[in-house]
Image (tube, rainbow, N blue to C red; front, top):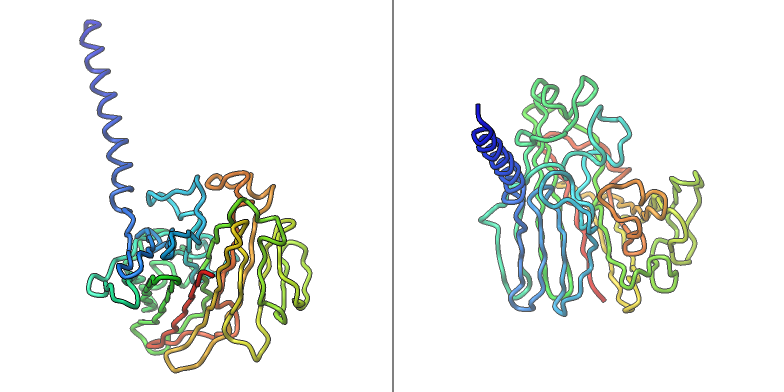
Length: 343
């Protein structure tokens, strides 16, 4: 075989490898093309990625962005997006309660279907609905005999679950509503669950560590579980701010159900208000907790999809159903809503 022939074959192989790599990249990207919903009446908009049904942007009528997405975040469908509003279900964290299920469950690791018939754009707002059925989940929903959510276990038991995420944008607000339905084939099948809107808020001017320009108010009286120090206490009436790694769960008192809080979001003196509530299909209001999180210095350096200095640019305030909700029985549903309003 002469040298020219060898070079021709080598060049062809390089082209084929390049084309395969490009095709693989395009496969992720094209399937995860952002869906932009614009409210014609006000000009406000929101952007959602089908992978995880992750909201990645909320621009109000003045063009102000409320959500943070890391500049290193994967948005091509190769992994969950770091930022925006990832969805958490059926477990918070990675406790091992559901076997080998990934961190925060499987909703953010799967493609959701857009319900075409639910798209709208009216004077009041614009939006659409995404859906995911347990039988259509392809990626990472746990495996092993100890996981009721694994493909094998759920098939044998008859466990099934359908989830719908409705997203609505208006001039000053973004509403996300997650409906969880136990659609199991047998009446005696129920499951326990946790679910959150893992919302990343953008802090303007990189002022997340400035207690005057970035803080969270409205969680006074909540029982606090500090996951970093192990401390447990009742939150006083002072605003919550970031001066170190923050990872705390705020659980409401017995007489409190919905979460209502205000976040100062940076040097432009902007604010966002959060209101989150949950209701069963039977009309029972469920208690909603809140998680406040900022990875600070060391943890930021350990995340490949997050910049080392980006802890200055965001704070997570995550409303969630974490306790006091019981099991979701067959044929039952829960509706969980978060409303973000810009101030």
